[in-house]
Length: 109
Image 1 (cartoon, rainbow, N blue to C red):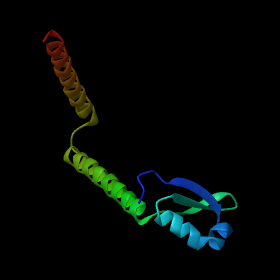
Image 2: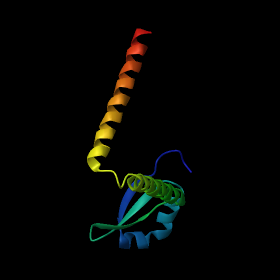
Image 3: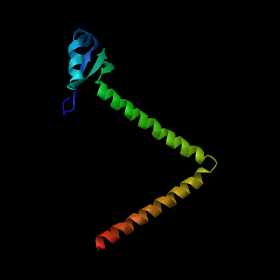
Image 4: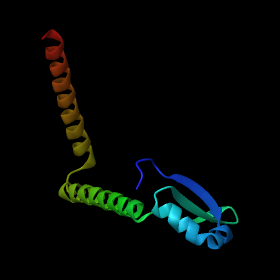
């Protein structure tokens, strides 16, 4: 595969069908990604197996991130939102103060 990023081409479904072998070869070589349209509406895409794996990896990380948020939500379900907001603001203020102090130490060094 080439080091350059593939270009995205838009084709009608009938054009894709007529040139399918060529489309698959260009996608396989990493030259293109093809968006297939019907009546000027994108309905599908042809991407390389490598691109598909990248998409799956992004989806997994996305789902894992939401699972972590769900876990946090369950851990704090019995705490009033006002208290959570108050504690979050307090923690943020502490972090900002620490960062300010670090910057001041760095500028005087």
